[in-house]
Length: 181
Image 1 (tube, rainbow, N blue to C red):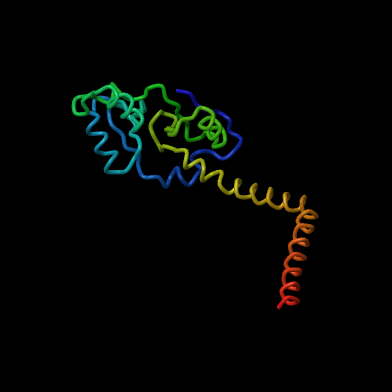
Image 2: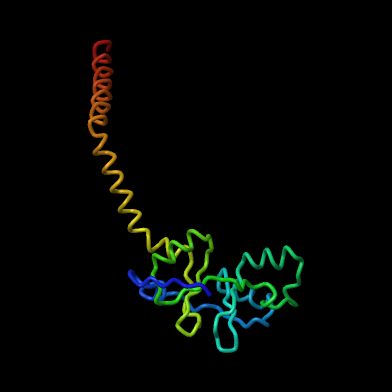
């Protein structure tokens, strides 16, 4: 299990998503894929977390696993246990880890779901790419408005000249229309 340990910013547990998300779907490794997929479909979830007898995370089963490891291989969902198709080399965060660290890691390593565990390795939440977008959205909007203001400010003389030419052209069309008409 790889984790991040930078403790300088907002913690994952401090995000509204941490406590507001519905409970994570968990199954044991011997659960058949069909059972897990039925629960995923019912809840509209993209993944289930696979836990051991002590409720510690041992894997994750995602829609991607379903396609690549079951459907593409022609396996039977009713007979195949999650242990055969789950991802076991997964990244997990601790609830005390820094949000920015994991935003960077998920972006760089291109994975969609981040199980968040407590100090005992038990699942607390799953953060998705969308959760991190909601975290960065206010900053992105501020930066976009700042860039727009800076661009307009830097190009203001050119905008005035173009606006003047357009206004002059419009006036000439109006005056020409009055003279002709």
